[in-house]
Structure formats: structure tokens, C-alpha cells
Amino acid sequence: MQISMYEAIIPIANRMLGNLSAILDKGAAFAVAKKIEPSVLLNARLAPDMFPLTRQVQIACDMIKGGAARLGGVEVPSHPDNETTFAELKARVAKVREFVNSIPAANFAGSENKAITLKMRHGDRHYDNGLDYLRYYAMPNFYFHLTTTYAILRHNGVELGKSDFIGA
Image (cartoon, rainbow, N blue to C red; front, side, top):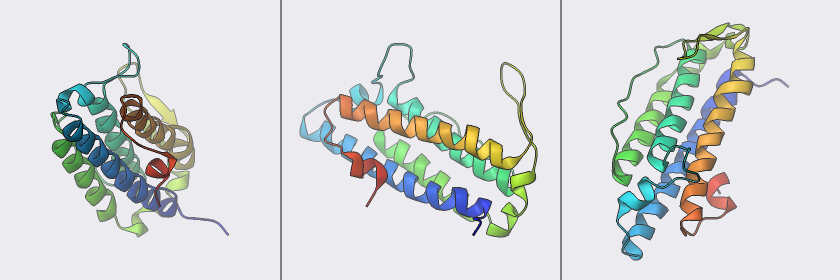
């Protein structure tokens, strides 16, 4: 049995964006319980040359909305990167989740064979087909930034476990 491109991205997006929202809730609750200024967590990094938590969430959202849009044949929405609170990050996650769910499943038909070209700062990145784009760019980047968000909060003492990342 072969799964559709829709099945390969949208259910995963739903689950992982939901998990990300719950992880952000735990980060916000931790800041309140420990009387830590939330900006300390929101600006935390794993290493000096890595993006802070806020940017990790923004990029995770951008990766999954871009992947869904390109494979679903719709325009990639633009969201300004201006979130500065846990509530604003959660609102972005919700907006992205709503967007990916708005793309009809039928739009993904044949996208596994669709060539994808990304305009990037350092030149175009071309994928001969949507399946390679999904497997080797969109999903790895999505998971990387989700994992880094989780790791930043965990490193700072937020009580998170594997089940928070994977979901129930």
C-alpha cells in the first residue's frame, strides 16, 4: 500500500504542531512557576551561534507551511517574524496548523513527481520531485527546529520528556 503525499505531511504536521503548542505551554508555565522572566527562555540558545527558541519555532512553522503549500500547489503565506511571547508563538503555531489543514487533500495528487525549486540567499535549491523535497528538506528541517525548541526548554529545566515531543 502506498500513502499519498497528503498523508505523508498533513497528519504529521497536525500532530507535531499540537505537540509544539503543548511544549510551549510547559515552557510558559515553568517560567511562571519558577518566577523566571519568559524572555529568558524565549531568547535561550543551545550554543552561541544557534538561533534562540523564538526563531526555532518560527522556522519550524515556516518549514511545514512551506512544505504543505508547495506540495499542495498553493501560495506559501508570509508571516512576519515578530513574536516575542509564548502566547504569540502559540498563535503562530495555531495559524500554521489552520493553514495546512485548509489545503484540500486532492491538491497533493501527483506532487510526489512535481519539481520544486526554492529561492534561497545562496542560490536556488532544486529538487527533481516533491518526494525528495519532502524527505530530504521539508521534514528534516521541520523536525530539526522542533527538536531544538524542545532541547532548549529541556536544557533550561522545563520538565519535558520524550512523550511531550512524540505525543500521546
